Image 1: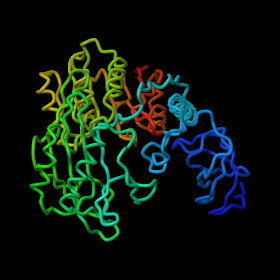
Image 2 (image 1 turned 90 degrees about the vertical axis):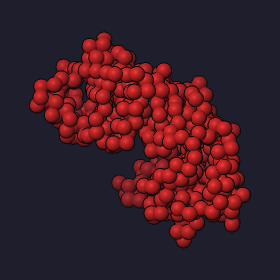
Image 3 (image 1 turned 180 degrees about the vertical axis):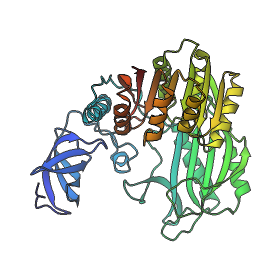
Image 4 (image 1 turned 120 degrees about the vertical axis):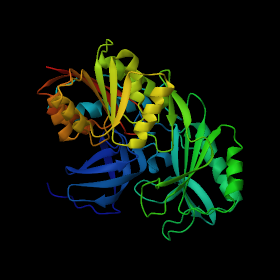
Length: 451
């Protein structure tokens, strides 16, 4: 394929044929693929070329000549430009179909014949996030909060983030104004100067408790006692931390975490169980859909009360403890020691005595169990985006669990892993669960049964 005669800043009319997995429009120029921001299948757009690579390029729609009937008109384009909600210009019913289709495409690529059910969506797909990490910068002499323009560190000032709990949005604005009141400086990335880099807010959906974390480049913030008092004046704030991150890095939280006021954690509930959440806890960000996701996973485990269950990547124990009352025993395995301590506390808080949690790699533990002739009836896996390591798949083949319930956040690595397990396991249907409406992220649940 020869690259067409197009270059950066060229303007041309494009017909959009499809959506990429990132939610960009897909157009062809002489069989050369262009990924087009803010464009939907069936549309004809006037676009400007942003970048031309060897085998594909990028463009941005300037105006739409022919609109898709699936385009949402009343959404501010800022949510697409910042990447907060890259699918917000697409009708929600079509977003759900898009996510179902992405799973189907990845399964087909892996030559897997798996039925994909309709995506389980939300009644109200906005204002669902229970956690926000909002960057802060010094702009025109003022501490300013907002979000980055896509693929950049250019801050776009914002107050309504569309997909976050409105009480979190209001709290970010309130904290920003308190910091301004005491002339605290926002971070200046190009000069590595200033103080506050990020405002992080978590809100427990079922209890209403909130936690605020101020991420600062420096430890010393003038008027910090007054700032603490002003932030804690909101009775919903149960916990206030200062985190120090002086490194030049994209990692949000630094190592030093200091409790300024209130409790060390906030409490929330999932499926009738109470969980303690600390600043670093991994906790699903969509509370209503988490209930559906976990219930689906528990149903697919088909527990009778006699099974030994292993919850891999167990975090603070949310999945393992959700099914403990239906199992004989649950063992959670997790690499992060703090998360294991949280999980043990969560088991104690909920009076669950048939669950234990250990620090370690799942593959190491399972291989030892296989040597000791211990059995696992059901294995729950909820891995990060990179999916299962080959060493874990080897250990699965050693321990031979009867059933595996695979919760995935990445269709491509899910398809790869299912292909590797398909010789020894029958693969059931897959159900996408829309944990992240308005974005291209896809969560799903699949059951495997040993042949």
